[in-house]
Each structure stands twice: as structure tokens, then as C-alpha cells.
Image 1: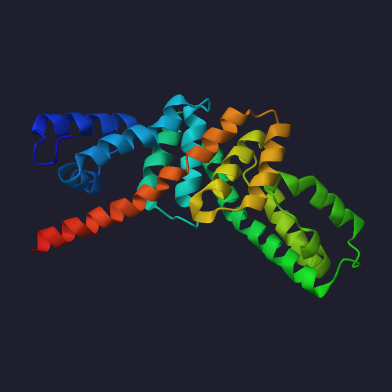
Image 2 (image 1 turned 90 degrees about the vertical axis):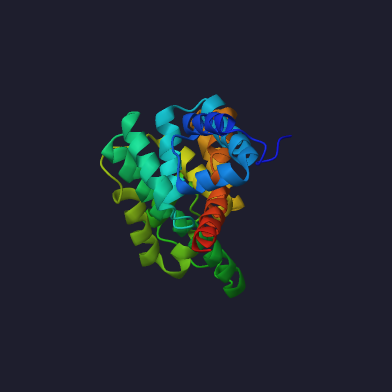
Length: 247
């Protein structure tokens, strides 16, 4: 294997061209990595681009999942978000699609509230507390589609459960994603290492399969989150470049 010092400018230029073709961007951190470790840039492009290149989801759906992952409060990566919102619109996503995704990003935090409240209810022994029938009907209808186990929340604070359900049900755009598409976005959010949530994943996989999504589609949604870890590499390369430049 050639070392960085052995690699020609032409070889580096080819790696850069391939990276842009796979990932759709080139930034200062990738230039730093190209000079210091070109093999990383070359192999990362192949690895990170593989799910989008080979999976069954449409380009529109892939980009909407990237929008969700980069805008999630567990990541908040603005450069990637800018890239993927732009690309999503270019491949057919609508404004309603984008804001439906952003609504799901906000809903993501509710599942942890539900799980923590289940633990509280377990120790407080509130299993005998009744839930209003109309509220239970709403929970049964909306809960599984959003991985929200709201039973304990409804027992401890029924009004809070109602306003949560109002937000889930009425806070999204009038148009936007189909139910199965919302399942894909939510699965990607909860499967990503930045906010991994096994309980939510189990619920969402069951819901998604009942919506006739295939295992291959679900796997692709899961895979798309892995390479967000490169944003740590990007930060490190950026800092390295700053230090080198200041020396």
C-alpha cells in the first residue's frame, strides 16, 4: 500500500472525484484527510455511499432520512443538513415532506419520556390507576406508529398525555410523508448510534413490517445512520488543520 507521501497528485485527484460522486460534497476536512490519509477518504466514500447506492429506497427517501439524522437533537450537524435538504428538494421532496421529517425529529424525544415514566410507575405501583377510555383509544391508535408507550404517562398525568398526542397528531403538516415513510424516518432516528433506543426500534420494526415495508428497506434505513460518526473525524481533521496553519 502506498503511503501518503508516495501518492501522486493525479491519484489524489481521482480519489477526490470519486468521493464527490459518492457523497455529493467536498469540504476542508476532506481535503485535510486527502493529504494526510488518502486511503481513509477512498474507503470511507465506498463504505458510506454503499447503502444509498445499493439499497431499495428512493433517492428522495434516502435524503429525507439524512435530513432527519443531521437535524436530530442528538446530532445537530448543520453542514450535512444543508447538503441533504438541498438534495432532497432536488430529487422530488416537497416542503411538506421536509417539515414532516422535522416534526418527527421533535417527536423523537417523547419515547424516552415514556420509557422513564414506565420505570417511575413500576416503583410507584400505579398499575391499578384507571385511564379514561377516550384517552386509551387515542393511545392505542397513535402510540405504536410512533413507538410511544403512553400508558404510564396517562396514569400519572393524563393531561400531559393528551397534549403529547395532540402534538403527534396535529403538529405535522397537512400533507407530507406516507405512514410507512414516517416509520422509516423514525427507525433511522432511533437506530442511529447517537440516540440508540432498542425498545423504540422493536416497536417501529413491527409497525413497519405491518405496513408492508421489506426487511431490505428497513435495513437500509438503519445503515444510513452509521457513517454520521465521520463527523467526529471531520472535527478532528478541522482542528488538526487549524493547528498546522497556526504553526
